[in-house]
Image (cartoon, rainbow, N blue to C red):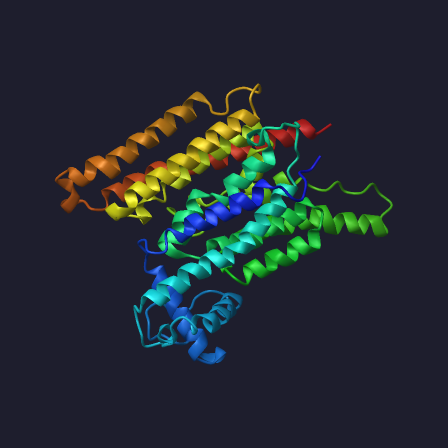
Length: 391
């Protein structure tokens, strides 16, 4: 039976993570902070016809029009905090009021992500009735989504609006899981008009909709032959989105939008794939926060999230064998070695001045192995599953 619509623990999880995000308001922020401040100024100060031609700043507007209108809406709230942030010529402007507004805007727009996570949790099958909330798949999924380490550091420290965008993606997936395919397709279309990089997911969505909605609707209307069975979501966008990465080889691997998590709470094999991909991808985000003040934050947050992921998924799938294969365990232990070498040993070595990008290179190469392996294992798993289904 699917998880009930309302859980007393869900608001607590959502409120807790929102309060945690508030603690990062004064933390380090990347150039993306200035990028979005400039977009606020451009969309507020200039007519729409000039938005994509304004180049006073090097950070020109390069997102689809719907995101530009999103910034335009935010700008009308921003003027009540500090109107000077909306001046195009105020490059690198970061008054305390500006910082407060932009940080709060990310936290506030994350409400869509929270709602989408709730909808996904409603779709999870509760395979065993347990009074222990830690043994409930819906609770585990809620924690894995809401307390996503990658989103926390990329959106609320580094600075981005990925939670807002992932909200549309997750909500689209939830609608497909609820057999509301037209709503799911509409939400995905909105997402494409917010950020064009999600175009690479469009083929998977197209195939899934054709097989699971369009062809079945045609058969219901006129075709005398047996209806085409709909594809399970695992072979459609859910699995194809497993690594829905967005910001390049470092950032994207750690921010899978929850689709992998949905599979992980319901399948032991998918749980193992998720643990490798999540651990690898999340560590690949470490170079984004390179200042010493953020080192304890990223280490503690990742440890807490990783420990919970391993322990919670092990409890859910206990009795069904090990989640990880021996080679995967060795690889993850090697990840610890790379982390110690890059974060502790290298900064104290004489190579720090001569080869400053060596840790980034080592992290990228090592993590790429784990990400590629996770995808290959996923594809093999899907092919094996389809083969077993054939008569």
